[in-house]
Image (cartoon, rainbow over all chains, first blue to last red):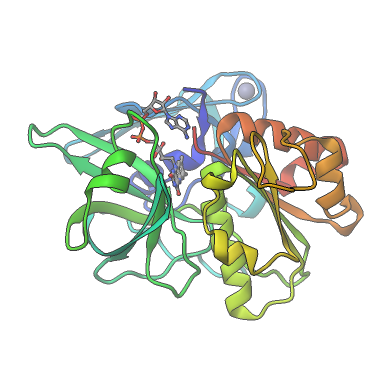
Length: 88
Length: 241
Ligand SMILES: Cc1cc2nc3c(=O)[nH]c(=O)nc-3n(C[C@H](O)[C@H](O)[C@H](O)COP(=O)(O)OP(=O)(O)OC[C@H]3O[C@@H](n4cnc5c(N)ncnc54)[C@H](O)[C@@H]3O)c2cc1C
Ligand SMILES: [Zn+2]
């Protein structure tokens, strides 16, 4: 299957952060791309969720829904910004 | 000044099928009853989770087909051999339940803005579902935002919401990619620069675009919009796979 996008992770993101995060902007640690998480690359469906930078492919964030909660990591984000349009 | 958006519903809950409507041979709309449904925005979706007897679970996203204020409904197209969609299209019946999480999504959503920026909706196949919710939202509000849908579909048999869209011929155009109805003026063709330029609001009008469908369609259509001079940040995309 071709990659989809961060919209498909909206449910997991909302369960993790308690709010919509698809409109939040993330800053890629590798290439400084600043884009909504909705536009990140997502390969799925799979047991876990991995969001990659659409510009450079860098792994931004992973989430695994486990019994009782969600385990997440954000190895490739230097910033996450939930202001409208990421504060731009 | 910005109102806080409603908090998404992040817990799984049971939804009951209250009715089903066949849209075409491989597509069905499911009407749902969800206790305490908070209402949704046009373009949002839900996650649906099925659990097999052996405990195996499969989760898929489905757009909310109705306008805000309408009961939740999903329109599902069967993907042959798929884990979830054949069950939702062929098997599940009124009175059955599924697990659901949502409404969710705050990016691929439309509501009338103060500037009434013209809206271009580009659908490929089942990607028409959330865009139909936007058209219905506008119509129910009696809103005057200029809005136009360009719907790319393989053949007449695969059109979803046929009658509803036919009733809005002034703002809806179909583009057949494999076979056309008899006597159709345009031979079957993929969406291209000329077809799009003939339908799209000019960039000078500061249009917003919503593009939804298979990944290949979305990438292609979004690229054409950029070539036409659309600002990438004003082209919102949702890839179905
Ligand atoms: C945000 C979002 C909203 C969505 N909304 C809708 C919606 O409103 N209506 C709807 O019908 N779908 C929608 N989808 C797609 C849906 O989530 C599933 O991907 C789809 O129903 C297939 O799931 P499945 O379990 O049946 O197939 P899977 O088990 O995931 O896939 C089975 C096989 O089918 C193939 N396949 C999967 N999808 C397609 C496709 N689109 N075209 C051709 N082959 C395919 C795969 O390559 C695979 O070989 C949406 C997706 C996203 C991310
Ligand atoms: Zn990057």
